[in-house]
Length: 289
Image (cartoon, rainbow, N blue to C red; front, side, top):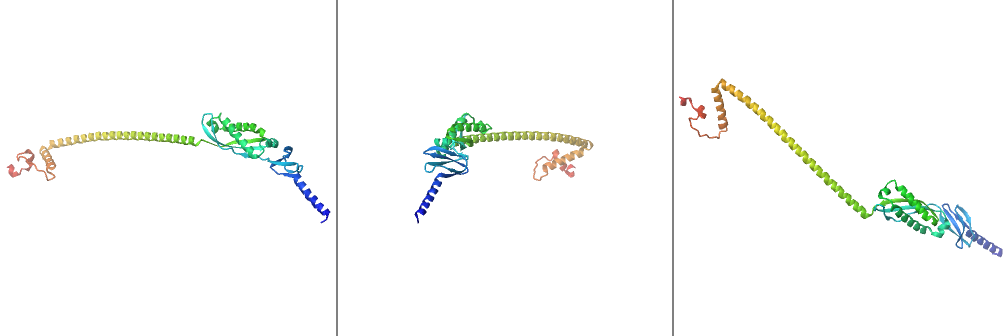
């Protein structure tokens, strides 16, 4: 290979290295800052092919899109001394690469700082609110206040807090168990009260039914006695009329009924005088003579 060819190859390689060291690509959704000896030399927020001084400058790439943070759940004491376990989340965007680089340097460090800010501000804001406020339409106002305060505190980090929300607001485990036990006791008390009221109502119903039954039976007995008395009265009148018409036949008929009642079953023994008036119809005609 000739010296000219060797020089050409060398220049070609050198040019390739020079181009690759001086040109860089800013992708969609990212932004880049050119640093020279650790100091910012240029900032690029639009996508495209960019250039820098080779070997003297380096590039740091930052996200331009909205990023999410999720602070760990934390217990908060409300103004009414209620305790809640708050699980919040937020979204932020890097708006000042220089301030972001100087303040935190990386997304991981920024995430930790913003998580701490969200938890701290959430404790402060919810410490002035009640449980009713957190669970009502006032919650939106509380979230707006938290967002504004976090935004103000994070401004020196070179970021903008887009949104802060409470994903979940749960009672602590001990409080939940205590509330559950209290609700259970209350339901048991209500059940016992309902059973007692039911038993009382059943007793009242039974008493009313027994009273009505007694009244009905008494009225029926009274009516039966009246009807029996009327029947006896009518029977007495009929017997009296019959006795007037034929006293001898009436005496004979009544005596036969007495015989049937006393001697009808066949196992009755009577010891009486033969001259007894009760046996007068047993006397034979011979005996009568």
